[in-house]
Amino acid sequence: MRTSVKRRGQGGLPFVFLNAAITADGKLAPATRHFMAFAGQRDRQHLFELRATADAVMSGARTVDLSPVTLGTGGVQYRHARLREGLQERHVRIIVSGTGSIDPDAKIFKDRSSPIIVLTSGRAPAARLRKLRRLADDVKVCGKKGLNFAMALRWLRRKWQVKRLLCEGGGEVNGGLLEAGLVDEIHLTIAPVVFGGRKAPTLADGSGFGRIADALPLTLKSMERVGDELFLVFRVGE
Ligand SMILES: NC(=O)c1ccc[n+]([C@@H]2O[C@H](COP(=O)([O-])OP(=O)(O)OC[C@H]3O[C@@H](n4cnc5c(N)ncnc54)[C@H](OP(=O)(O)O)[C@@H]3O)[C@@H](O)[C@H]2O)c1
Image (cartoon, rainbow, N blue to C red; front, side):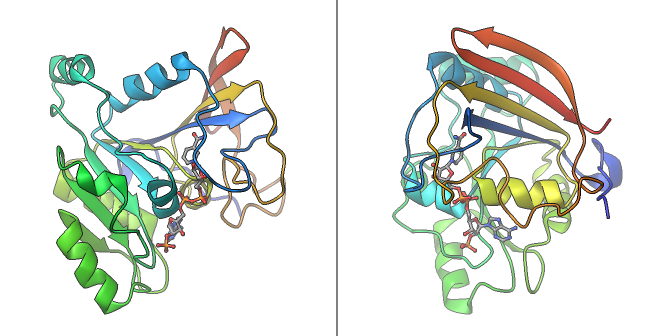
C-alpha cells in the first residue's frame, strides 16, 4: 500500500528534504562504503547552501562512522546567511542509530560547535544508551522494536524547533524516511562516474517498495547542468 506523504508542518512534522550525490548507476559510495568525494566543487557548495536553510542536518550511524563528516555549517559566510534568514547561527546535528552502534571516536564528536542529537530505538542495549548519553547532547528513544521516524520527527519539531530537516544519507536512513512517507523533497547531484557493485549503497536502501503501485511518485521541480554533472530537485508526490 502506498504510504501517504506528510507535507510541511502537517501533524507537527518538519519539512524533510534529502540531499545526495549519486553516480550514474545510482550509488552513494563504492561497495567498500569508504568515503569518496566523487562529485565536484559545485556539489560541495550546494551541500553547504542547503545546510544553511535547515534547522537540523541528519545522517545515519554508518555515514558518521565511515566518513570524516562533522555535518557542520561550512564556514562563516553560511552562518551569516542563516542569521540573515532568521535561523539559528548553527543547525543541530542528528545521528540515526537504531541499535546505538555509533563509533564514539567518530570525527563528529570532536566538533562541539552545535548540539548533537542521537535518535535510537528500544533495540539499543542499556550500556550503549549510557555511553551515548555521555557522548551526545540529547538522546531520544523512539519506538520499541525499531526506530519510529514519525515519532522522532515530531519530537524534533517539538523539543528542538526543527521545522526544516535536511537528511544527508546514507542509503538506509534515506530508505527508512522514504518508506515512512516522510520526505517532501529530494536534491540529487548525478556525477558522471559508475561505481557498480551490488553491495554498494544506493540512494534508498531499506526494504524498498515491492510494486510500482506502491513506489513513491516524484515531480521534477528543477534541473541544472554544471559541466558533466546534473543537479536535480524532485518534489515527492504528483
Ligand atoms: N554520496 C552521498 O551523498 C552520500 C551521503 C551519505 C552517505 N554516503 C555513503 O553511504 C554509506 C553509508 O550508507 P549506509 O546505508 O551504509 O548507512 P547509513 O544510512 O548512513 O547508516 C546506517 C545505520 O543507521 C541506522 N539506521 C538507518 N536507518 C535506520 C532505521 N530505519 N531504523 C533504525 N536505525 C537506522 C542504523 O544504525 P545502527 O546499526 O546503530 O542501528 C544503521 O546501521 C557510506 O559509504 C557513506 O560514505 C554517501
